[in-house]
Image (tube, rainbow over all chains, first blue to last red; front, side):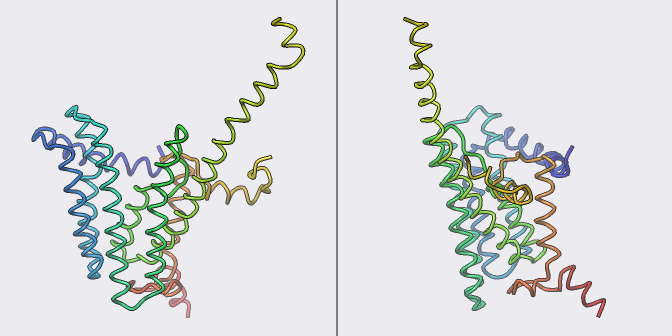
Length: 215
Length: 67
């Protein structure tokens, strides 16, 4: 088992108990999703007022709700297309609120350089989600690039817990730019690969040997 | 010819790191996580002009000790 796989397996133990509790109480998964966003907004406030440890605790709580909603929906057989839409839409609110909290903080501290870095991080984090959603309306799957939402959230938690938010913002910003570029390139390649196959098929089906054989 | 084939072997490591296609919980993912955590925790906050961080970070601590 890999190092990150082991951490994931360890974290899953307490989460299973919380999932079982929510299933026993028959809490609607959409309510869990909404609660997660509300807690994330509180975490954003904590970031804005430079209370990183409070923000860390709130982010952990919020992301427990965010993680379990899908699992609870599955166990209660309440999975729905709207649930998926609701979840991914509210995830954007959570992301945007956390970065807005940091922009507020750096603006209050008079650090315009970090206001800019956080704004760029916010833009490319949103574009990471948008490029995948838009690409998957054109091609089957576009799951490429490292900096997806779970990585982003865990990094923000690490940044808050260890008070190393600037380094975390640099990492998220740079890797989000590459993720967006990766998704654009991948989609372009996939969309241009299809006509190539069609062209090759047409070429093979019109060779004199093939025409002679079928006629 | 794809863009990827034009890239020389040493640069292909960087290409694969930035244009990521690996799943989570693979050794490549572990390596990337370790590299990111090393950057976050080892880099002295002063080098990045961190507005909120306290302390010098691991490299800063080593440099201060050696001086």
